[in-house]
Image (tube, rainbow, N blue to C red; front, side, top):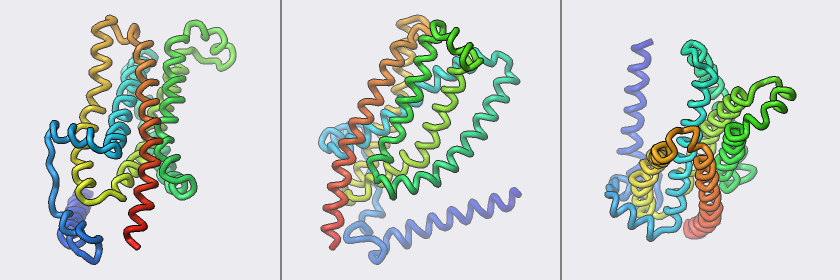
Length: 278
């Protein structure tokens, strides 16, 4: 098995090298000046990236998508894991649940990868781009609703569903994480990469560099900084939950607005790119 893994890895590296040196530089495979630009990789600092985002609404909207996803996932996931540890104080039970969670996540992601192709073909880029924030808004809102109003709803939840609000919040949070991760890999990531297609080579390379420098780190660290600041100010994660819920909704609404704006720009750019290729 190890030999097969090593050979497969070497094969992948060889194919990547071949594509970069032979395909990406072949004028017959790439239009116009794209073959010449493919060899160069634009490196931009924080100041240059921020300046470029300020100048380009298209790339700015794309960066907002990346930032909002990272912040939203971080806000919900940390709160969910706190509830998960409360529901499963025994390490063995916790590990068993996380193992089942990982298995279900893989299966759902595989199914969503197949469904995602149909979503792009039938509904287009806009619907695909809005699916992930819509799922996060619905499941995240339900999770925080159960967290905040669980004691008041406990008689009804226990009598109707036969579970405690805490356990229901754990299951809803698990569904949120599963659906958000599966839609990310099947819809969000392809949408992000497709958004670069109609751009000219310079905008494409600078845009990717700006999103990598500003969008990815800010998305990953922004949610953590918000939570740490609120915990410091409120005294605990539980006390800061109402504020986290409000911030999550605000972030997702900004995400949806940016996705809608980018959808209009993307369709216009695709039409212009198709007209220029004819």
